Image (cartoon, rainbow, N blue to C red; front, side, top):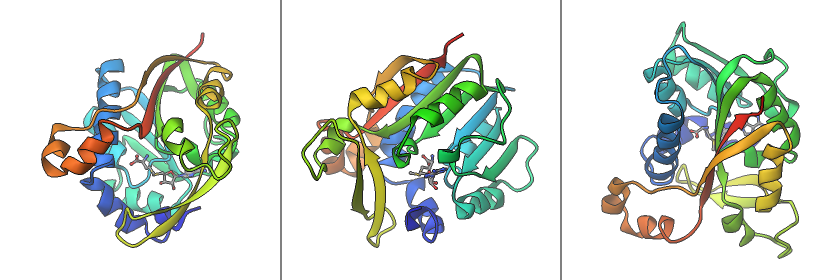
Length: 238
Ligand SMILES: C[S@@+](CC[C@H](N)C(=O)[O-])C[C@H]1O[C@@H](n2cnc3c(N)ncnc32)[C@H](O)[C@@H]1O
C-alpha cells in the first residue's frame, strides 16, 4: 500500500479537503452524478469502498444514508472513527478489497460508491463481481478512476492495450510520495464492469468547478481540455 494512504494519511486527509483535483473536480462530478441517480438517500444503505479519510462518508450521512465504509488502510479507518465518533448510521472497517467483501452478505445495498480506488487493483473482475453480489436488485454502482486515455501517456512500453503497473510521484501532501497503480485500456476497464453482472448507464469525464476557474486558472484550463478521470454509473442486472 502506498505510504500516501498509510504513513501520510493525516496529511492526505487535510490536503483533499479543499484541493483542486479532489474538491473542485472529482467530488463535484461524482456528487452531481449521485444526486441525479439517487436524489433521495434518506434511509438508503450505502457501501463506500476505499473510503479514505471520509469526505464521502460526510456527504452520505448529510443526505441521510446508512453508511458502511471500507478501506485497506488502518490509518484511514482510524481517521474516519475519530472524525465521526460513535455514529448509529456509520460502520467503518479495514479490508483489502482485492480480497473481496467477505464481511458483507448478498443483496444488502442500494448504492456502492467507490471514488478513486479501482486503479489500485490488478484484477478488477472479482471486485466488480463482489459489488454486484452485495447490491440489491436494480442497485447502483458509482465509481471514478483514472482516465485510461490520460494514463496511456505514462505507459513504459507504449502498448495502450497492455495492463501495466505504474509508479508515479505525487505531491498531494506537499512532499513527493511514490504511488503504484494500474493502467488499462478503456475496453478492459468497461469489460471489468459489464462482464460481472452490471450494466453501465452513464459515463462522464468530469466537470471542473467554477471556483477552480477563479482559484487556479492553469489547472482549470488543463482539466477542461485534457482527460483526467473517468466516472461510471452502473446498475445491477436483475
Ligand atoms: C485516492 S484515495 C480515495 C479516498 C476516497 N474514496 C476519496 O475519494 O476521498 C484511495 C483510497 O483507496 C484505498 N485503497 C487502495 N487500495 C485498496 C485496497 N486494495 N483495498 C481497500 N482500499 C484500498 C486507499 O487506502 C485510499 O484510502
